[in-house]
Length: 194
Ligand SMILES: [Zn+2]
Image (cartoon, rainbow, N blue to C red; front, side, top):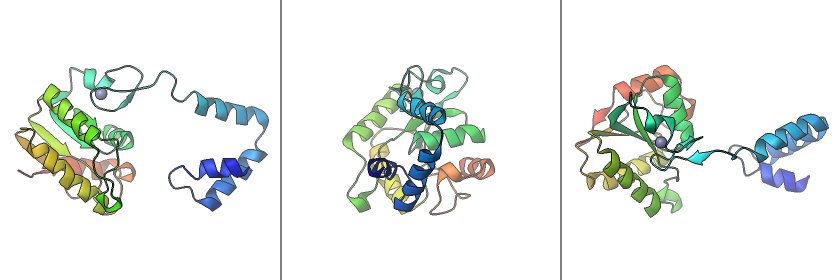
C-alpha cells in the first residue's frame, strides 16, 4: 500500500492525502475492474510513438498532423506539451503545424530549455521552413521564462515572423484548462514580436 501511495504521488496534482484516498479506493474496487485498469496502464505505450518531427504522441510516425497535406504548413505553433496541443486541436481554432517542447522550461528551478529540446526545435524549423512561429507557452512566470529562452533560440533560426499568443489566457492559468473560445481569442489576437 505504501509503495502504491508513493507511486501515485508522482502523478501531477496528487499529494499525500489524495494518493492515500486513491489507494484505498483502488483497494475497494473489485478484482476485474482493477485488472482492466492495470491492463490499460501497462499497455498505454504499446503502439504509441513520439513523432520524430513535432514531438506529438502518435500511433504512426510522423503523426497525422505532420502528415496532413491540408494543414497550413507555413505556420508552426510551439507548445509546452501534448496536452496543450490537444487543447488547441479541440478548440478548432488553429490549422497549422505544432512543435511540442516536451521539457519543462523553468530557469527559476535551474531547469532551462534543454540543448536537446532546442536542437529538436531548430531541426523542425529547418525541415518545415515556416513563415511564422507562434510561441504558445503558458502565460505564467515559468511560461514567460520559456518564452524568453525560446525567443533566443528562434531569433537565430531565420524565421520571418515570430508571434506570441495574446490576451484571453489568464496569467497563472494553463492552456490545457482554457475553454475553446479563450484559446480562439488567444490565437487570433497573437501579435508579432520581431
Ligand atoms: Zn508530428
